[in-house]
Length: 242
Image (tube, rainbow, N blue to C red):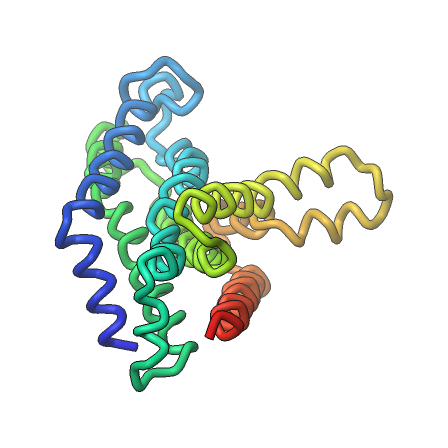
């Protein structure tokens, strides 16, 4: 698993793809937070808070994480190297876990430049330091867990696809449905009391607690369950390709 993790990380950073994705992610976030005229602009909000960043980032991650995960198995299958991996002395579960961890790590690295935003807001607050660090810390923890969930879903999408384009589109679709689609469907209140159950199936409600600075064991357990189920399914579909 460690060997697979190192191989995948080298494939991301060795050909500049990870650097380009991290730079693009940071540039888009910076434009929305400080330059573009929109509801996420920190200067227009007039508060020393990164809350708009934590609202914006999940939408960016829906497109970024599937771009990272689409190559994990779809590319291996396209190039024929998946059969070579099957011949190596490693379990499919180790293969899936190693690739999942590599996507998760690169996703987390996308958040590192945002520490500059945190410092900027911290300094610009009146008085300086007038920022809710507890809520900010909780939101970062939530983002790290959300990245893991998106990564696991992206790995599952890649295991289901024959090529990278299909893996990317399927990954974006699945992440969108899990984060926003289910939440919106529940908001129409078409199922009566069952809407609450439907609402809690999606990512949004569970991520929302983190953005308020609340690290609930139930929310953490939910994401662990989703990540585990996605990786188990990915393991199953890759085993079927042996």
